[in-house]
Length: 256
Image 1 (cartoon, helix red, strand yellow):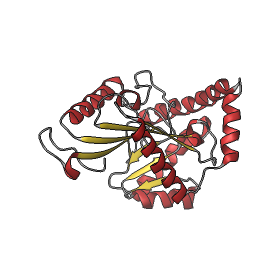
Image 2 (tube, one colour):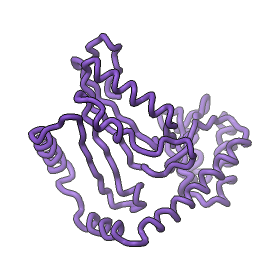
Image 3 (cartoon, helix red, strand yellow):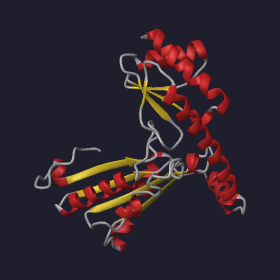
């Protein structure tokens, strides 16, 4: 969140304005809420809006659809927030790179919704976004957009995405199986979706561990704030996952 939500009776920072970013499946942890947790978030949003607070809710759904457990809330919270209250402007952010497995296309999609949003407001949002795009990336790649459109129009599109999903799900399940029994100095954070998992490295410096893995073992990871190590199990074949996690734990033990 861009600011901490205040209590129901407080104006809060920015005279009651809040920018809240929800990123599920989360990067870097690979976690998505279950139905009960999602309902709690939606209830909290509604209460906050009813108290007079104005909320810009950004739902970053770049990995949407990569849900590997049945209890996961398998839709974007945008769907509930879109018509929840007049004080909530909901924005859905999608990206073809992960959702459609086209690394390098860098195509994004924005969808805006708010209860009672009039045409004047919609036009203003459109102009703001056009200005932001023009002043930053200038314009999106027409070639990439047309290639993606043709791919999504193919009768085989759904079947092809499902095949890749099953590969990722098998790598996820194999990762869970290994990490449930593997001992070491690192603690894996809850994960159930997406491309990644994340270790809490505790007393081990995550950046030192990242460099050790890269320089000595040729394993690429991402360190965050010297405390967390992100691992993309999605890019590793099932038969190599045991070696991957064993090497990570072993290297962490050497540093510890």
